[in-house]
Length: 146
Picture 1: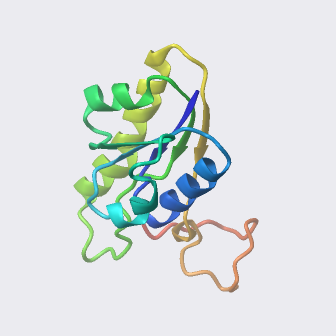
Picture 2 (picture 1 turned 60 degrees about the horizontal axis):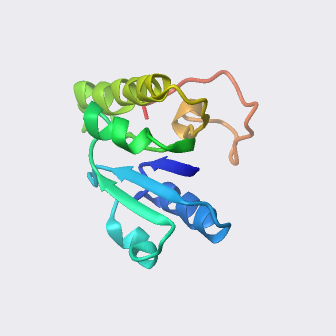
Picture 3 (picture 1 turned 180 degrees about the horizontal axis):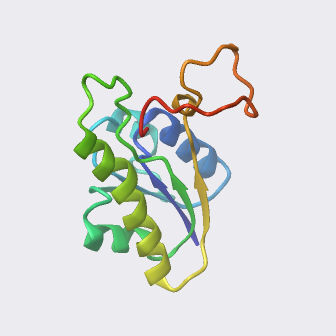
């Protein structure tokens, strides 16, 4: 079986792709390339364990194709804009919340049980008083939907 990495052309996603392929796991990446770059995946483009799908998670048909045959999902696709004055609430909702819903629904509809790993970001801590910030720091005061 394969691993699906959403947002796999991004900084963190591409490092997960590196790790998985180096450990012999076939990987399929789905990324719309709005903030990711194929240069992060250049070393794998012709590798037999690598497959790339340029598509948005909101495209339910392409997403269903991407999920098919995968037993692991690493969900890193998101709109990373954290500067509130530049952020569009609608874009954040669609790319961070609706896209995650579409992914979970595609996984459910596939009928296969899958492992999912979801990454959060430091924006959940808000303007933390402690740097570096420990994972149990609280209260959480998110500054962005990212």
